[in-house]
Length: 250
Image 1 (cartoon, rainbow, N blue to C red):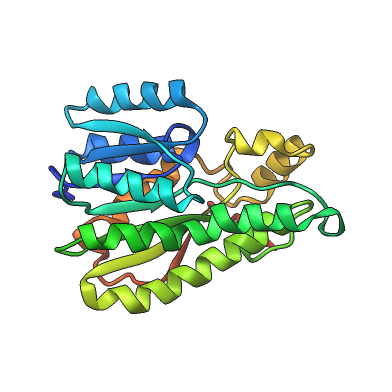
Image 2: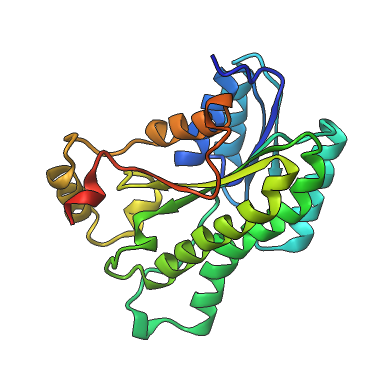
């Protein structure tokens, strides 16, 4: 249906959780995948093996998306291996979970650099490889528009990310590049395990979700696949919320 066979995708933070699910979904639809990671090499290699079992090419590349040299090296490797890039998913994320008044400038800058500014660096290096157009997606969260306990720095960085997506959409649209955000609801990933009130978050999410279950990484991956298809050619600069209706309950 999606006619994506032979295309090339980069997934940052692609070794685990949502990034892994997106990488595998692409591979299952014939897309060659570059898996970026920064710490979990074994997870990245395991993901790459599963991707290659789908009959497509894959390589892993270590790099901190907040480091411009790492980003340049990553795209140099992509150009060498494939010569082109069709899809890019900015999924790598990090941040400190603290009340606002306990945040230092280092905490703030760390979240902003990895969660927001990284997309700008990725676009700057990746767009030249999208010679025939392409799709750029950023993975956000409901904390960009809602106040969540201890989520100040991350939430603010996700809000900045969504704003950057809109500005990139205006600038890159004439180049045939679609830029959109996928905002995920409560997903039980490794990142959520860092929240001291994880169980409360999950229980509340389930109770307030009209569809009666948590959002899964695969749900997010389905939207990423859709946004790469010809069915989504007129979706530009949007934030698509994948949460089973949780966010409409207040």
